[in-house]
Length: 71
Figure (spheres, rainbow, N blue to C red):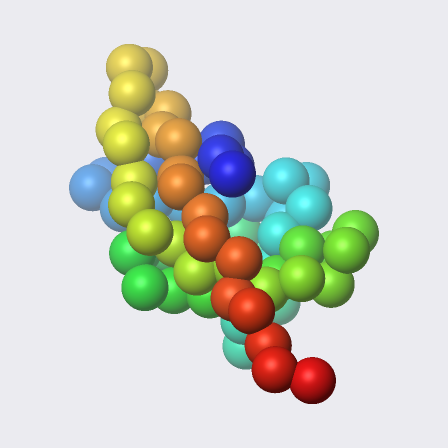
């Protein structure tokens, strides 16, 4: 699964409008890195950031892996 983010000053940022929250961080915009966990606002599923692929014009794609929770 890929999520689109934006880079600024060497950090990767995700906007809330992308539909994901960083676990424990509910600011409008926040920095993320591999290993961070995101929650989908729509499905409430939790994902771990596996890798970040920097693109052109300060954009990046983020690979997410769903965290499987034992019920």
